[in-house]
Figure 1 (spheres, rainbow, N blue to C red):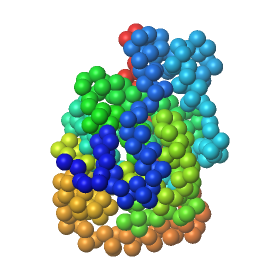
Figure 2 (figure 1 turned 90 degrees about the vertical axis):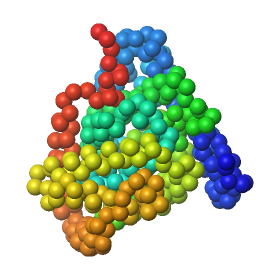
Figure 3 (figure 1 turned 120 degrees about the vertical axis):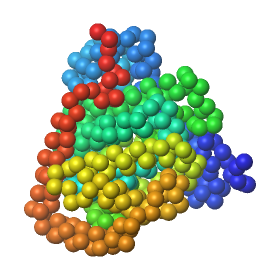
Figure 4 (figure 1 turned 90 degrees about the horizontal axis):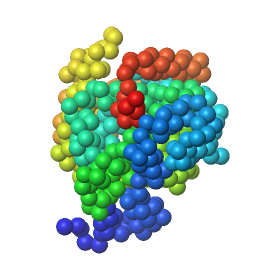
Length: 392
């Protein structure tokens, strides 16, 4: 039973007070929950019809360019044309330099923000969690799937990674097509769009975009790592290109230049979702186990696995709030009282980084070296690459 004076649409419930203050965004949200990605969905259908020829054309076109496959099937050609089009709101100079804002985040805080922030927020959506658990993607193979997401993120943020034909560009389009494949499979197996909205719909993609821009850096503020206004504008501008390659409606993100603007959008999405369910809790439990193990295994790790798990719990509860953490079965942590001390130390390090440009450049280079090394760790194909393989 829904609350009085609310309007349920595709699994979303919007309070009239919210509509009064954000009418345009609310209307866009309610429309978007029933919309997938027509271009990518058409390509997946063409794969099913034409098989290896269509897949070969797309694989070749992504790396070598659309002009290299003049005889590409029509839907593949349309997707390549869309991907290669660089809208005028994309800053191409930033693409050549990479996501310097993300690259400068020190390890292990980058991993903590990725796990306790980005992925925890993603999995808190019951519709996304239902899809992931239903396809067996994470609960049984969490370390692998986390590594695959990390590989994509690394390819995206490295200098030149989003230029046409570069690894981040190619992998982002592959992720887009994996979304379309999951969407087609869910619909073929009885997914109730009227109840839950379209699987991996436009609102879900927009929320995921926020999981790699707003969410990790909001969490990092808890430990004293804050972005300047200039850095915030640079971050969101860089990720405009990612959003475009993922097939996201530009009305969601063009013009977002600050955490404040992004937070308004994120709060709207989150306020309309149902609470996390058992699927969300299963994913988060698997995530934290894998993340703690990975952090403890890094060279010269200052803590063991249990301590890393407790730190993840502490920052997650502080960032997402006790109510959300309880719903996700994230327990209280004995390390919570230490967060102010951690933040004080990290804020001093961050102030030094911002005061001396050379120190900041060194941090960015360390990030480049770390992410480049990470891209060599997975030598076989990821899930988003495997589904595009042919049978030849």
